[in-house]
Length: 436
Image 1 (cartoon, rainbow, N blue to C red):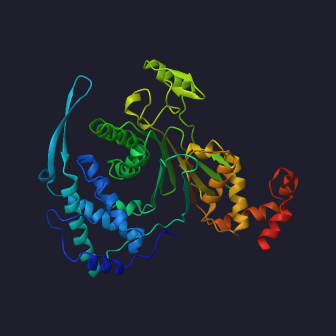
Image 2 (spheres, helix red, strand yellow):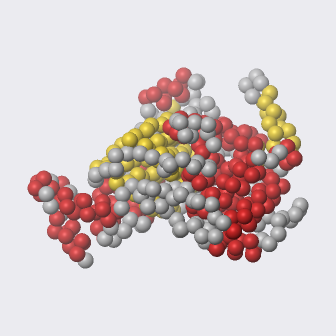
Image 3 (cartoon, one colour):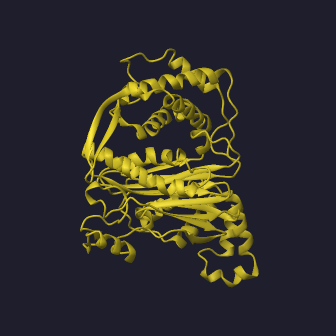
Protein backbone atom coordinates (compact mmCIF):
# COMPACT_ATOMS: atom_id res chain seq x y z
CA UNK A 1 0.00 0.00 0.00
CA UNK A 2 1.45 3.37 -0.99
CA UNK A 3 0.97 6.67 0.75
CA UNK A 4 -0.56 9.61 -1.09
CA UNK A 5 -3.12 10.07 -3.82
CA UNK A 6 -3.20 8.34 -7.18
CA UNK A 7 -1.23 10.63 -9.51
CA UNK A 8 -3.40 12.82 -11.74
CA UNK A 9 -2.45 15.40 -14.37
CA UNK A 10 -5.31 17.71 -13.31
CA UNK A 11 -3.23 19.65 -10.72
CA UNK A 12 -0.67 20.37 -13.44
CA UNK A 13 -3.31 22.20 -15.49
CA UNK A 14 -4.19 24.28 -12.44
CA UNK A 15 -0.50 25.03 -11.84
CA UNK A 16 -0.04 26.23 -15.43
CA UNK A 17 -3.13 28.43 -15.19
CA UNK A 18 -1.62 30.08 -12.12
CA UNK A 19 1.75 30.51 -13.84
CA UNK A 20 0.99 30.98 -17.55
CA UNK A 21 4.47 32.27 -18.43
CA UNK A 22 8.06 31.71 -17.28
CA UNK A 23 9.53 34.12 -14.75
CA UNK A 24 11.66 36.85 -16.23
CA UNK A 25 14.80 38.37 -14.65
CA UNK A 26 13.88 40.27 -11.53
CA UNK A 27 10.33 38.89 -11.28
CA UNK A 28 9.31 37.77 -7.78
CA UNK A 29 9.56 34.11 -6.90
CA UNK A 30 6.34 32.17 -6.19
CA UNK A 31 7.55 31.32 -2.69
CA UNK A 32 8.96 33.21 0.27
CA UNK A 33 12.12 35.14 -0.49
CA UNK A 34 13.55 34.17 2.91
CA UNK A 35 16.59 31.99 2.44
CA UNK A 36 17.18 33.09 -1.16
CA UNK A 37 20.76 34.07 -0.42
CA UNK A 38 23.99 32.47 -1.52
CA UNK A 39 24.17 28.69 -1.96
CA UNK A 40 27.19 26.43 -2.10
CA UNK A 41 27.18 23.91 -4.94
CA UNK A 42 26.30 20.92 -2.65
CA UNK A 43 23.35 22.88 -1.23
CA UNK A 44 21.66 23.41 -4.60
CA UNK A 45 19.59 20.19 -5.00
CA UNK A 46 18.28 20.22 -1.43
CA UNK A 47 17.41 23.91 -1.41
CA UNK A 48 15.58 23.70 -4.76
CA UNK A 49 13.72 20.52 -3.82
CA UNK A 50 12.54 22.04 -0.54
CA UNK A 51 11.14 25.12 -2.33
CA UNK A 52 9.24 22.96 -4.81
CA UNK A 53 7.85 20.67 -2.11
CA UNK A 54 6.28 23.65 -0.37
CA UNK A 55 4.90 25.00 -3.65
CA UNK A 56 3.43 21.68 -4.77
CA UNK A 57 2.10 20.75 -1.33
CA UNK A 58 -1.39 19.93 -0.15
CA UNK A 59 -2.96 23.23 -1.28
CA UNK A 60 -2.38 22.26 -4.92
CA UNK A 61 -3.51 18.64 -4.56
CA UNK A 62 -0.40 17.33 -6.29
CA UNK A 63 0.06 13.78 -5.01
CA UNK A 64 3.36 13.20 -3.15
CA UNK A 65 4.34 10.62 -5.76
CA UNK A 66 3.85 13.05 -8.64
CA UNK A 67 5.39 15.98 -6.74
CA UNK A 68 8.57 14.00 -6.03
CA UNK A 69 8.85 12.98 -9.69
CA UNK A 70 8.35 16.56 -10.88
CA UNK A 71 10.96 17.84 -8.45
CA UNK A 72 13.50 15.24 -9.57
CA UNK A 73 13.01 16.14 -13.23
CA UNK A 74 13.32 19.88 -12.57
CA UNK A 75 16.31 19.62 -10.23
CA UNK A 76 18.06 17.29 -12.66
CA UNK A 77 17.44 19.80 -15.43
CA UNK A 78 19.07 22.58 -13.42
CA UNK A 79 22.07 20.46 -12.43
CA UNK A 80 22.72 19.67 -16.10
CA UNK A 81 23.07 23.37 -16.90
CA UNK A 82 26.28 25.37 -16.52
CA UNK A 83 26.00 26.65 -12.95
CA UNK A 84 28.91 29.02 -13.39
CA UNK A 85 26.47 31.58 -14.80
CA UNK A 86 25.05 31.83 -11.27
CA UNK A 87 28.45 32.35 -9.68
CA UNK A 88 28.15 34.99 -6.99
CA UNK A 89 31.51 35.25 -5.34
CA UNK A 90 34.39 33.27 -3.97
CA UNK A 91 34.77 32.81 -0.25
CA UNK A 92 38.03 31.95 1.43
CA UNK A 93 38.07 30.34 4.85
CA UNK A 94 40.92 29.29 7.06
CA UNK A 95 41.19 25.55 7.50
CA UNK A 96 43.71 23.77 9.70
CA UNK A 97 46.84 24.99 7.97
CA UNK A 98 45.14 25.03 4.56
CA UNK A 99 43.26 27.69 2.70
CA UNK A 100 40.04 26.42 1.19
CA UNK A 101 38.25 28.20 -1.62
CA UNK A 102 34.52 27.77 -2.20
CA UNK A 103 32.30 29.11 -4.92
CA UNK A 104 28.92 30.49 -3.92
CA UNK A 105 25.96 30.76 -6.28
CA UNK A 106 23.26 33.42 -6.49
CA UNK A 107 20.35 31.63 -4.81
CA UNK A 108 17.62 33.93 -6.10
CA UNK A 109 18.48 33.71 -9.80
CA UNK A 110 19.13 29.99 -9.46
CA UNK A 111 15.68 29.45 -7.93
CA UNK A 112 14.09 31.49 -10.71
CA UNK A 113 15.78 29.22 -13.26
CA UNK A 114 14.59 26.19 -11.30
CA UNK A 115 11.00 27.39 -11.21
CA UNK A 116 11.02 27.80 -14.99
CA UNK A 117 12.38 24.26 -15.35
CA UNK A 118 9.61 23.01 -13.07
CA UNK A 119 7.02 24.83 -15.14
CA UNK A 120 8.44 23.30 -18.34
CA UNK A 121 8.16 19.80 -16.86
CA UNK A 122 4.56 20.46 -15.77
CA UNK A 123 3.71 21.63 -19.28
CA UNK A 124 5.20 18.50 -20.82
CA UNK A 125 3.69 16.08 -18.31
CA UNK A 126 0.26 17.68 -18.54
CA UNK A 127 -0.04 16.08 -21.97
CA UNK A 128 1.13 12.63 -20.85
CA UNK A 129 2.16 11.58 -17.36
CA UNK A 130 5.15 9.22 -17.26
CA UNK A 131 4.64 5.92 -15.42
CA UNK A 132 4.95 6.42 -11.66
CA UNK A 133 5.45 3.26 -9.60
CA UNK A 134 4.17 3.48 -6.01
CA UNK A 135 5.58 1.54 -3.10
CA UNK A 136 4.78 -2.14 -3.17
CA UNK A 137 4.94 -2.64 0.60
CA UNK A 138 2.50 -1.46 3.24
CA UNK A 139 3.41 1.78 5.02
CA UNK A 140 1.18 3.94 7.17
CA UNK A 141 2.68 6.98 8.90
CA UNK A 142 1.45 8.73 12.02
CA UNK A 143 3.28 11.94 12.95
CA UNK A 144 2.72 14.44 15.76
CA UNK A 145 4.95 17.23 17.08
CA UNK A 146 4.42 19.91 19.75
CA UNK A 147 6.42 22.86 21.09
CA UNK A 148 5.26 21.97 24.59
CA UNK A 149 6.50 24.28 27.36
CA UNK A 150 9.56 25.47 25.43
CA UNK A 151 9.73 29.00 24.03
CA UNK A 152 10.52 27.79 20.51
CA UNK A 153 9.91 24.66 18.44
CA UNK A 154 13.31 23.37 17.35
CA UNK A 155 12.34 19.85 16.22
CA UNK A 156 12.00 18.96 12.56
CA UNK A 157 11.00 15.73 10.79
CA UNK A 158 11.03 14.24 7.31
CA UNK A 159 8.87 11.47 5.87
CA UNK A 160 9.65 10.41 2.35
CA UNK A 161 7.93 7.26 1.08
CA UNK A 162 8.56 8.73 -2.39
CA UNK A 163 12.33 8.37 -2.03
CA UNK A 164 12.74 6.56 -5.37
CA UNK A 165 10.80 9.20 -7.27
CA UNK A 166 12.68 12.11 -5.69
CA UNK A 167 16.03 10.67 -6.78
CA UNK A 168 15.07 9.00 -10.05
CA UNK A 169 15.73 5.44 -8.85
CA UNK A 170 13.87 3.28 -11.34
CA UNK A 171 14.75 -0.25 -10.23
CA UNK A 172 12.21 -2.58 -8.62
CA UNK A 173 13.43 -2.03 -5.04
CA UNK A 174 11.12 -0.21 -2.62
CA UNK A 175 12.78 2.62 -0.66
CA UNK A 176 11.42 4.96 2.00
CA UNK A 177 13.17 7.43 4.29
CA UNK A 178 12.17 8.88 7.68
CA UNK A 179 14.00 11.20 10.06
CA UNK A 180 13.62 13.26 13.23
CA UNK A 181 15.92 16.15 14.14
CA UNK A 182 16.07 17.80 17.55
CA UNK A 183 17.71 21.22 17.35
CA UNK A 184 19.40 23.15 20.14
CA UNK A 185 20.70 26.71 20.32
CA UNK A 186 18.36 27.68 17.48
CA UNK A 187 16.57 25.92 14.65
CA UNK A 188 19.07 26.53 11.81
CA UNK A 189 20.90 23.19 12.08
CA UNK A 190 17.66 21.19 12.33
CA UNK A 191 16.13 23.02 9.35
CA UNK A 192 19.32 22.49 7.38
CA UNK A 193 19.48 18.77 8.16
CA UNK A 194 15.81 18.25 7.30
CA UNK A 195 16.49 19.90 3.94
CA UNK A 196 19.80 18.34 2.96
CA UNK A 197 20.50 15.03 4.72
CA UNK A 198 18.11 12.87 2.68
CA UNK A 199 19.35 14.56 -0.50
CA UNK A 200 22.92 13.62 0.38
CA UNK A 201 21.70 10.05 0.93
CA UNK A 202 19.79 9.90 -2.36
CA UNK A 203 22.69 11.34 -4.39
CA UNK A 204 25.39 9.27 -2.69
CA UNK A 205 27.32 7.09 -5.12
CA UNK A 206 26.68 4.00 -2.95
CA UNK A 207 22.91 4.45 -2.53
CA UNK A 208 22.11 1.39 -4.67
CA UNK A 209 25.00 -0.95 -3.81
CA UNK A 210 25.59 0.02 -0.18
CA UNK A 211 22.69 2.07 1.22
CA UNK A 212 23.89 1.61 4.82
CA UNK A 213 27.15 3.36 3.95
CA UNK A 214 25.30 6.07 2.02
CA UNK A 215 23.08 6.81 5.02
CA UNK A 216 25.87 6.88 7.58
CA UNK A 217 28.27 8.95 5.48
CA UNK A 218 25.57 11.49 4.64
CA UNK A 219 25.40 12.61 8.26
CA UNK A 220 29.05 13.63 8.16
CA UNK A 221 28.65 15.35 4.77
CA UNK A 222 25.64 17.29 6.05
CA UNK A 223 27.64 18.30 9.12
CA UNK A 224 30.50 19.54 6.94
CA UNK A 225 28.10 21.48 4.71
CA UNK A 226 26.39 23.11 7.67
CA UNK A 227 29.70 24.02 9.32
CA UNK A 228 30.70 25.89 6.15
CA UNK A 229 27.40 27.78 6.25
CA UNK A 230 27.81 28.36 9.99
CA UNK A 231 31.26 29.89 9.46
CA UNK A 232 30.12 32.34 6.81
CA UNK A 233 26.84 33.25 8.54
CA UNK A 234 28.02 33.03 12.18
CA UNK A 235 25.54 30.32 13.20
CA UNK A 236 26.01 28.47 16.49
CA UNK A 237 23.15 25.97 16.58
CA UNK A 238 23.30 22.19 16.41
CA UNK A 239 20.94 19.25 16.07
CA UNK A 240 20.75 15.61 16.97
CA UNK A 241 19.21 13.36 14.35
CA UNK A 242 18.02 9.85 13.65
CA UNK A 243 17.16 8.45 10.22
CA UNK A 244 15.66 5.21 8.98
CA UNK A 245 15.98 4.05 5.38
CA UNK A 246 13.90 1.07 4.29
CA UNK A 247 15.37 -0.64 1.21
CA UNK A 248 13.47 -3.72 0.11
CA UNK A 249 13.53 -6.12 3.07
CA UNK A 250 16.33 -4.25 4.88
CA UNK A 251 16.13 -1.51 7.49
CA UNK A 252 19.11 0.82 7.73
CA UNK A 253 19.42 3.32 10.55
CA UNK A 254 21.94 6.02 11.46
CA UNK A 255 22.02 8.55 14.27
CA UNK A 256 23.84 11.36 16.04
CA UNK A 257 23.00 12.25 19.63
CA UNK A 258 20.00 11.17 21.67
CA UNK A 259 17.15 11.12 19.17
CA UNK A 260 16.24 7.45 18.79
CA UNK A 261 14.55 4.83 16.65
CA UNK A 262 12.99 1.63 17.99
CA UNK A 263 11.14 -1.30 16.46
CA UNK A 264 8.11 -3.20 17.68
CA UNK A 265 7.95 -6.79 16.43
CA UNK A 266 5.06 -9.12 17.26
CA UNK A 267 4.12 -6.92 20.19
CA UNK A 268 7.63 -6.74 21.66
CA UNK A 269 9.85 -3.65 21.85
CA UNK A 270 13.21 -4.15 20.11
CA UNK A 271 16.16 -1.87 20.92
CA UNK A 272 18.06 -0.94 17.75
CA UNK A 273 20.63 1.59 18.99
CA UNK A 274 22.36 3.28 21.90
CA UNK A 275 22.11 7.08 21.95
CA UNK A 276 25.24 9.25 22.09
CA UNK A 277 25.45 10.75 25.56
CA UNK A 278 28.54 12.23 27.25
CA UNK A 279 28.37 9.75 30.16
CA UNK A 280 28.83 6.75 27.86
CA UNK A 281 32.25 5.29 28.64
CA UNK A 282 33.39 5.25 25.00
CA UNK A 283 32.10 8.78 24.36
CA UNK A 284 33.78 10.16 27.48
CA UNK A 285 37.07 8.52 26.46
CA UNK A 286 36.85 9.96 22.93
CA UNK A 287 36.15 13.46 24.23
CA UNK A 288 38.92 13.37 26.83
CA UNK A 289 41.43 12.02 24.30
CA UNK A 290 40.70 15.09 22.16
CA UNK A 291 41.37 17.36 25.14
CA UNK A 292 37.77 18.02 26.16
CA UNK A 293 36.00 17.12 29.37
CA UNK A 294 32.71 15.67 30.58
CA UNK A 295 31.27 17.31 33.69
CA UNK A 296 28.05 16.99 35.65
CA UNK A 297 25.91 20.14 35.76
CA UNK A 298 22.31 18.96 36.37
CA UNK A 299 23.23 16.24 33.82
CA UNK A 300 26.42 15.05 32.12
CA UNK A 301 27.64 17.67 29.61
CA UNK A 302 30.47 18.08 27.09
CA UNK A 303 32.77 20.86 28.29
CA UNK A 304 30.05 21.91 30.70
CA UNK A 305 27.62 22.84 27.92
CA UNK A 306 25.94 20.26 25.67
CA UNK A 307 24.13 17.19 27.01
CA UNK A 308 24.81 15.25 23.80
CA UNK A 309 28.19 14.08 22.53
CA UNK A 310 27.45 13.93 18.78
CA UNK A 311 25.46 16.30 16.59
CA UNK A 312 25.33 18.15 13.31
CA UNK A 313 26.57 21.71 13.79
CA UNK A 314 27.72 23.06 17.17
CA UNK A 315 30.67 24.72 15.52
CA UNK A 316 32.08 25.99 18.82
CA UNK A 317 32.19 22.46 20.26
CA UNK A 318 33.87 20.63 17.39
CA UNK A 319 35.61 18.17 17.46
CA UNK A 320 34.44 17.16 20.95
CA UNK A 321 30.84 17.03 19.71
CA UNK A 322 31.36 14.73 16.74
CA UNK A 323 29.49 14.69 13.44
CA UNK A 324 30.45 11.06 12.79
CA UNK A 325 27.23 9.01 12.91
CA UNK A 326 26.74 5.44 14.05
CA UNK A 327 24.62 3.08 12.00
CA UNK A 328 23.21 -0.42 11.82
CA UNK A 329 21.17 -2.63 9.49
CA UNK A 330 18.44 -5.20 10.12
CA UNK A 331 16.57 -7.77 8.07
CA UNK A 332 12.80 -7.22 7.81
CA UNK A 333 10.94 -10.54 7.90
CA UNK A 334 7.36 -9.27 7.65
CA UNK A 335 6.65 -9.86 11.34
CA UNK A 336 7.51 -6.25 12.29
CA UNK A 337 4.61 -4.12 13.53
CA UNK A 338 6.02 -0.60 13.37
CA UNK A 339 9.02 1.69 13.68
CA UNK A 340 9.07 4.65 16.02
CA UNK A 341 11.42 7.63 15.65
CA UNK A 342 11.39 10.33 18.31
CA UNK A 343 13.45 13.00 20.06
CA UNK A 344 14.66 12.89 23.66
CA UNK A 345 11.62 14.91 24.75
CA UNK A 346 9.72 11.68 24.19
CA UNK A 347 12.20 9.00 25.23
CA UNK A 348 13.12 10.78 28.48
CA UNK A 349 9.48 10.38 29.55
CA UNK A 350 8.34 7.11 27.94
CA UNK A 351 10.19 3.79 28.08
CA UNK A 352 10.21 1.49 25.01
CA UNK A 353 8.03 -1.18 26.65
CA UNK A 354 5.47 1.53 27.47
CA UNK A 355 5.24 2.41 23.79
CA UNK A 356 3.86 -1.05 23.02
CA UNK A 357 1.10 -0.74 25.63
CA UNK A 358 0.17 2.81 24.62
CA UNK A 359 -0.10 1.99 20.92
CA UNK A 360 -2.08 -1.16 21.59
CA UNK A 361 -4.46 0.73 23.87
CA UNK A 362 -4.90 3.36 21.17
CA UNK A 363 -5.66 0.73 18.53
CA UNK A 364 -8.22 -0.87 20.81
CA UNK A 365 -9.95 2.46 21.37
CA UNK A 366 -9.96 3.33 17.66
CA UNK A 367 -10.80 -0.20 16.46
CA UNK A 368 -7.51 -0.53 14.64
CA UNK A 369 -7.14 2.96 13.17
CA UNK A 370 -3.52 4.03 13.62
CA UNK A 371 -3.40 7.51 12.10
CA UNK A 372 -3.38 9.27 15.48
CA UNK A 373 -1.14 6.84 17.32
CA UNK A 374 1.68 9.42 17.44
CA UNK A 375 -0.69 11.96 18.98
CA UNK A 376 -1.50 9.52 21.78
CA UNK A 377 2.20 8.89 22.43
CA UNK A 378 3.03 12.61 22.53
CA UNK A 379 0.19 13.20 24.99
CA UNK A 380 1.50 10.41 27.21
CA UNK A 381 5.01 11.91 27.25
CA UNK A 382 3.59 15.28 28.23
CA UNK A 383 1.46 13.70 30.95
CA UNK A 384 4.61 11.97 32.27
CA UNK A 385 6.27 15.34 32.80
CA UNK A 386 8.11 16.13 29.56
CA UNK A 387 8.38 19.90 29.05
CA UNK A 388 10.68 19.67 26.02
CA UNK A 389 9.71 19.82 22.34
CA UNK A 390 8.23 16.42 21.47
CA UNK A 391 8.19 14.79 18.04
CA UNK A 392 7.00 11.23 17.45
CA UNK A 393 6.92 9.52 14.05
CA UNK A 394 5.31 6.06 13.87
CA UNK A 395 5.75 4.02 10.68
CA UNK A 396 3.35 1.06 10.63
CA UNK A 397 4.88 -1.79 8.64
CA UNK A 398 1.69 -3.83 8.95
CA UNK A 399 -1.95 -2.79 8.87
CA UNK A 400 -2.85 -1.62 12.42
CA UNK A 401 -6.06 -3.62 12.22
CA UNK A 402 -4.01 -6.78 11.66
CA UNK A 403 -1.76 -5.87 14.60
CA UNK A 404 -4.80 -5.50 16.84
CA UNK A 405 -6.43 -8.68 15.52
CA UNK A 406 -3.26 -10.69 16.18
CA UNK A 407 -3.07 -9.41 19.74
CA UNK A 408 -6.72 -10.21 20.39
CA UNK A 409 -6.21 -13.71 19.01
CA UNK A 410 -3.05 -14.31 21.03
CA UNK A 411 -4.67 -12.97 24.19
CA UNK A 412 -7.17 -15.86 24.05
CA UNK A 413 -4.43 -18.51 23.96
CA UNK A 414 -3.65 -20.61 27.08
CA UNK A 415 -0.25 -18.89 27.39
CA UNK A 416 -1.89 -15.48 27.40
CA UNK A 417 -4.22 -16.58 30.21
CA UNK A 418 -1.19 -17.34 32.33
CA UNK A 419 0.27 -13.88 31.60
CA UNK A 420 -2.99 -11.98 32.11
CA UNK A 421 -2.00 -10.35 35.39
CA UNK A 422 1.20 -8.86 33.92
CA UNK A 423 -0.64 -7.37 30.94
CA UNK A 424 -2.03 -3.83 31.11
CA UNK A 425 -5.27 -5.12 29.54
CA UNK A 426 -7.31 -8.19 30.32
CA UNK A 427 -9.24 -10.32 27.92
CA UNK A 428 -12.60 -8.94 29.04
CA UNK A 429 -11.63 -5.34 28.24
CA UNK A 430 -10.20 -6.43 24.87
CA UNK A 431 -13.38 -8.17 23.87
CA UNK A 432 -15.44 -5.17 24.98
CA UNK A 433 -13.33 -2.82 22.91
CA UNK A 434 -13.55 -5.08 19.89
CA UNK A 435 -17.34 -5.16 20.00
CA UNK A 436 -18.04 -1.49 20.72
